[in-house]
Length: 386
Image (cartoon, rainbow, N blue to C red; front, top):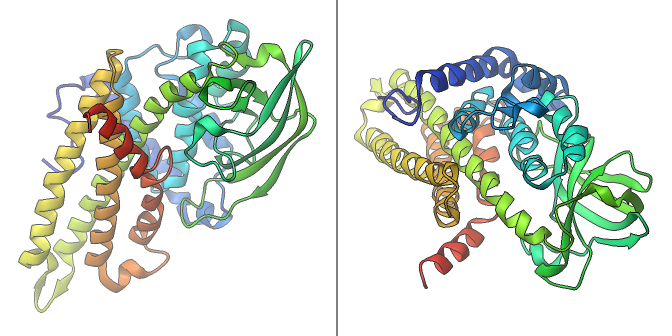
């Protein structure tokens, strides 16, 4: 069984595997060939969202009445694990923000009107979505958001700033967290925010260490007036909605991280089997072969943890502890695999155009985005009674 083989996992039916192959083939044939150009341009084109929408990739778990397929969560798992074959973590992240981070809460608590106006076109790939929570000088401390929304008749007027927002330079709408009440976690609300609203602007496009083909932005809100009907759920309950939404975000992050690490480990093994040093393949040196053995074993353990978390999540059970563990373990392992694989490639791995160097710099985000490893440890410690 290779690093990226799924035939022996009982969670996946033949239909799941066919869907996985469809996504993987699309990524390898239609996206991967553009990696150098899109990385250089610091952006992948909008047609990627549209094409994925047409193929049904963006709405597998959503209801049929808004254009989804109403399929089980294991299709989402297969999707998240197949996207890394595009060889661009930035594209993987941008697409998962669209399908698994910015839109689930709209389906969960949005009105029928909002689901039709925003979620349906996002599933179709006609609109690009972004999740806007993080703020300058706030980071992971969601309870202390400073962007303010105040009620004015049938509207809310929003002022403030957001940063590190994936899809931020071209999003058609945001799933936006703002403060509408007292300081602390009890005063936060969620809104759907159209980016053509007067007073809204992209302050700047941010340059990143990796994930170059995805756009990341700082956003500014200057007395932006939106209808009160754009609120998601109830006023001042946004913190609860955000924490629940984080679970799906973190889980797909762990799934795609481990799948990407498995892809790279497999490619590195093939390289080590052909690259010779001192008259024999690198893979024949025990110091190298034992690294593949160790990392492969840890990879299987992390994948099992991912599937444990996915099973609980799929059944609607409390999976916060397991998802936090999956993100912690998966993120740290993916970084270690990228680092060790780059070392095996040697000088070639250090070249900027090498796939492994891109994976090495892209992977570093996994232990930061969506909740840092330190935050994951804090959550896990609370669940274990420490």
